[in-house]
Image (cartoon, rainbow, N blue to C red; front, side, top):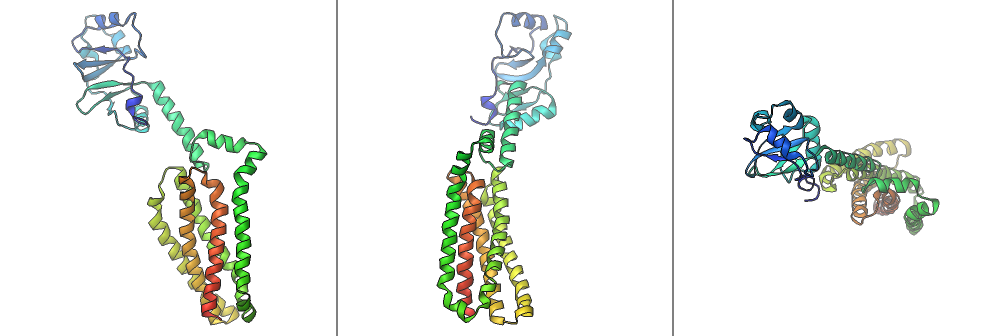
Length: 315
């Protein structure tokens, strides 16, 4: 079972009966090939009843029963316990762990070397993820040290999509030329609406990519982040209306900007969650693609929303 203690457990370890003498056990260890003799499993049939360390065996007399020097309540884990949880338990208890099933049957020992490998793998994977990569340390290292041609190959396609989107935005603005001619004041607020929507989306995008990098699914963030986006849009639109009225004294334009800010900010949150998730599902790194793609989609939507709203309210 991948990622569980079942695949890590070593069965090539000494096994003794409770009534066996220490001298007999030590004699039986000679000439045999074990993964480790540091700990001996003490079993009655298939059921584990204790563990005994080599230090205790060497300290005891030859005629001492193994049951007298064993730990009758050793630290154990189930075969389906995650390897990370097992490693955490071994570190905090400072002991070799025995793997037993639900019936108490012995399934092997978790050797310290194997658990150290697990901790190292988890550490390097977490460091890679915290750097914005969702695969492994090798992916992070490769992306950081790759040559210029590879860097261009990874980044340029997303930026070309952004360029196409920028041209699309220009076409959208041009299609509202008549409205701009009638009310030039509308044009003043295009950069502001686009910027606010981008800023809200960028904050959500950063949270989603950070969450994906440490294994938090988008579903766990979706509801709270959507509510946050809607509330931010409502607060920003509420603040914008009196400020525009105070400076420009145009109620229609103020209302159009406020409604647009609310709608664009709310939709930007949705876009900023959906795109990193989709790119991640496609097996691509969202750290490269989400920014340029989310920006162009949000910009287009913000411009369309603003001019459509202004057309209805102002002109």
